[in-house]
Image (cartoon, rainbow, N blue to C red; front, top):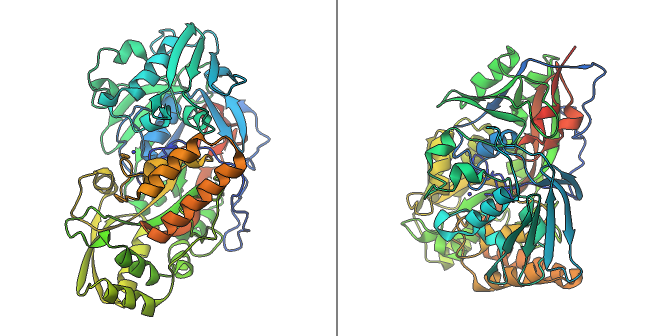
Length: 544
């Protein structure tokens, strides 16, 4: 976002995003390319059926790795966010600018735009039967704000240099007071899924608490069993406020080997799985799956680790040279097969973001210019280490292409393949110095303030270690600017500065492809959603 913690998803990580986040709302600007090579649906609500819902049965969803942490205050990788979506109910969600309330019943803003009043539904309960009240929401926000708890969400709740003040009015009413007007606050609040006060109030370090091993949430399914490296099973929560789910259970099968997972999908051992573009035709040929390609508002990019022990990527000219050596059009053909599944990216923002501008400085497809920049930087015989997530077909294809293209400008690239869990751990480690390059992706949602956690100098999710004081200041100004015209100018300037500095090489705005067994219905009400696949698993059922 996604610690791309936000709506955003990282590949294997951001899944931020963040995962924002990690968190993950989409609005206008998504791709509408027609699928000619594989006629998969691009409409997230296109799957309907004439069958009647029936209760019972199970659903098996493939995930690429073990979750990093089953706690929404800390989950930033795609797998953790996906499972948390079933375990922990959010206050509300946003899809294409429209709110859907979950735990909350309403959210009102005062005339001076400084006070938000949130009302919860009545009769909410946790999976263990305890009441879910305003105390839990206040506790959750205060723990996010507690610096000793190290939640990546904290910066979103510090506005104008001051923490948001959260107060319980009564058991179902919470008030948030801001130090200054912040158009981004609602996008911050949409990231929150409350955690239970009665479980965590005495825990010194919530992120590392053993209570996360047996999570107690408020979502449609409750925790049953976790076998590391194999599966996580959740069972139906009969008292779910949205109505008793149809399915008895949902299992997340940890499938690190893509080819083996595809075979399991075809054999009926898995019911839902992300697909690489290269595998669409094979799965589609079975006739057993509803295959949907939809925009998540996701950017796939090549990351430059300026914190590596060689220090070579601290030089802007080197980052620009590497970028010039590459071609977005070639990368899309190599990794995504066609523009049906990816479109060239230049801005660090995604098309669904407010004030998105893809007309920015770009470095692309100029070998001679790349060589000139390396010479100007005084760099020769350069060797770079490139960490690659094994089993990710797009990433593997991209890494081989990049290795070949950089060789043409005199850079030797060592590919270091590792399983997805190890890759994720290294990518999110702020102290990792033993690599220079990595491919990842993020989904940040509609409000551009979300990108602050990636590109300001002191943020925990600034994995590139990019540092530009002007960028830091503009993010502060943008978050507090209520005038939409002035705010747009700020974020367009931000996109241009970041693009020119080249802390990343934006490759493509990608589509996500999901295969869903046709024996399941209710997909239109479950809603395909960025990062987490389904917004509400309680709506899915086995057809009669």
